[in-house]
Length: 337
Image 1 (tube, rainbow, N blue to C red):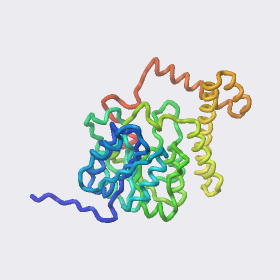
Image 2: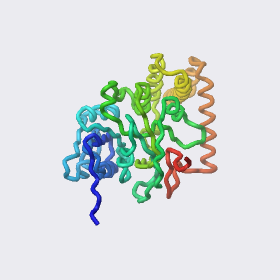
Image 3: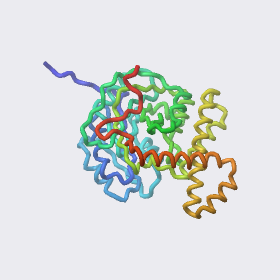
Image 4: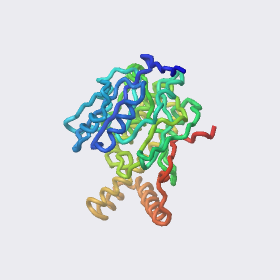
């Protein structure tokens, strides 16, 4: 029996963009997983001034199909600048972001591109501690649904005691034509929440954002992940970006209420981080002076300190990994429809 041939049409060709900084141990796996997908026409790796052998490791993963392009920045410019540059120098009509320590499961794009009528489409994410375990995700049915602005924002508000699972973690395939038509790119002054902020602006511009429950993206949970380390200035930039969007007056009322709630949460994290920075750099006296100078921040600081102490005590009594040692945790509650 002759094997059925899968033909990729020109409008289904994907450019995979990988911004990398000191990722020599994982970049090869990421590149190989992207090149293994027949829909991938380009893989653009931007080495953001790494100190290790990231560039060489990426080059070693080439499959000789001339689809891999590697660019190196002389100075570190951040993931937003790296992604914007890769978008500018690539040509495929569909754009997919892949973090340098993550990878695609086989067949990812075929499942996503089977869904019609979208500008952005995202699939489920499987979080794991060991990418080399060989564990495959469950075969969830797609169950496509449209994601609106309000639900997207609400899906990014952290819940106390729950593993991190904000919808901003989603890695959608984006239509280049939509980004270009609305002048959308990543804000290069942001190194935290830059995905979230871009998706918010896209939804405000009318993007049809589809989400499916099928899982094609593998995310490795690392204690030293950049996304898990919120620097004060990064929180400040995210807070400022969200306030800028609200100030335009273009956010629908229900979504604006959700955004103000999210903005307050980010502002509280920023106040606590600033307080702890003052304490680290200048001692308890400097931290107390900051609190006195910013009385409105005191409740957030007090709640944050109490929450951190309670969570630390809980981890000492009952340590629980964010991902089971032998299993996968999924971003979307698949299989419950």
